[in-house]
Length: 197
Picture 1 (cartoon, helix red, strand yellow):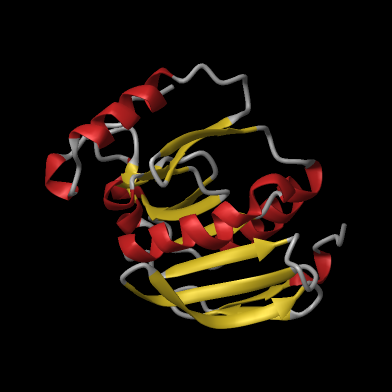
Picture 2 (cartoon, rainbow, N blue to C red):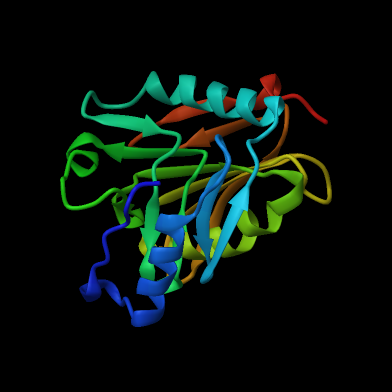
């Protein structure tokens, strides 16, 4: 497990320092994600094949429109200390210079241009509520939630215009419909490829 550098100027506290130490020392099985969500260190098993398929299809489409100096990361720690969170999103679009900064083993969530989460049945509420609030608080401009387990059926929701802990819903579509990512992406995402469980 990589070390998460503690920055006391970002609203950290002794409690945050303790969480980071626990996170650093977590001995998770290979492939498991260790995250801090609302002050609780959590472990999640590797996602299923459909989850991975969806993430790869989104990633492939995003690469077609990204500037040369931005990349997509699948296991990048994104820290939101003021929400006592260190998330590992399914996909994070981050400029190269941020990732190459040698000051820590994570990036501030605020540096991400887009974050994508694909829900898993066991912890979908984290992506819908806690992580959405954390990404909004950090100022991540766009949050794409691919919710395979939404109560009314699988949906994709694009959030933007963060204010405090809240995003504005920019667009929601059912699996099979097209979702349009605004500038700087300007990408129509065809969700017809996404399998329905």
